[in-house]
Amino acid sequence: MNTDAVTRCLRSLTVLFLCVASGRHGAAAAAPGAGAGAPCASLHIGDVVVATVREVSTYAATHGRPPRVVLGVHEVLRGDLEADRSRAVWEPPLHDIDYGDVEKNPRYQAWKATPMAGPKVGDKMILWGRLVASKEAKEFRVFAWARFPYSDQKRAWALDLIRQHAEAERAREAEKRAKEQALAEKKAQWRAKVSAEEIRRYATEADFVGVGRIVSGGDGGTQETPLDFEIREILKGQKHKRYAGNRYFVQVVVPGRVCALLDRRTPYLLFLSEKGMEFTPSVPRHPRIHSGDGIVIADEAAVKAARAAIGAAPQPSEQPPRSH
Image (tube, rainbow, N blue to C red; front, side, top):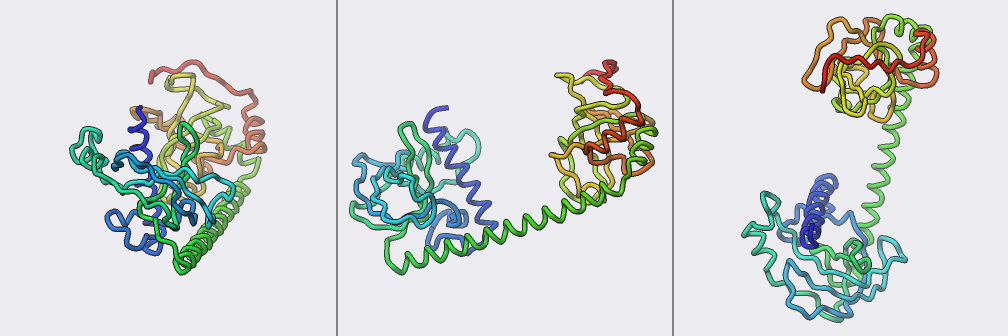
């Protein structure tokens, strides 16, 4: 991938990120007077500095080759206080050409060739941007929609906006932690309802017992949902399909009241039946056993109880009748 393609890719990712961010933070985050692309222009991200333009490149700048400038940074309003932002790129306005072969699109070629003026030497401004590593050193890419002539009033406005964004971020983080804590408590309560004796009974009843993690399916909802698990360890039963790398997968329809408690990081013990098994195009679908939920968090105590009931070491089972 050439340098131009990399730059275009970075700009496209910036467009996507800013659109999402702007939608999450609402109109208060939009740059006033940003013009075209304003709905995507968000001020809640990036570093913010007060700087004076010391030098401006002398070549004929275009959107495809934007002006480069040297900044004298007076004050960092947000971001790493020690970072060097003196080398800067005056980014062009965002384009909306993100379909097909962009490089060959006449609209993109026209956008790329559009002449672009840089700032004037001596301009003192409040600038939003991001540090990006280049071949030589990091450079400060100044957002096109967030370049404001300096005044004490504009500085106070910027600081107030930064404060609002910081407070909103802290509130979001606190809400996230509270939700995570509530979910952890619900998971613990769900796990505590199943005793070692019940786990032994489940293991005895099941045709297949395995430890695995969710790899696809489910969205944290509360509907009964088919979930795909990668089985890392088979405690009982055999494989019914061959996968590359000696991996193994099963699909299980999980009760709705349990789905909201599951995630892709936690290992689970699955207690499955082979009666009524179905073979989907990619993975065997097992019914759960009739007792319990057919699934339990695979903590040390649960696995120990299952092993005790099975009375055997993990079974690798090398007899899959089907190929994947």
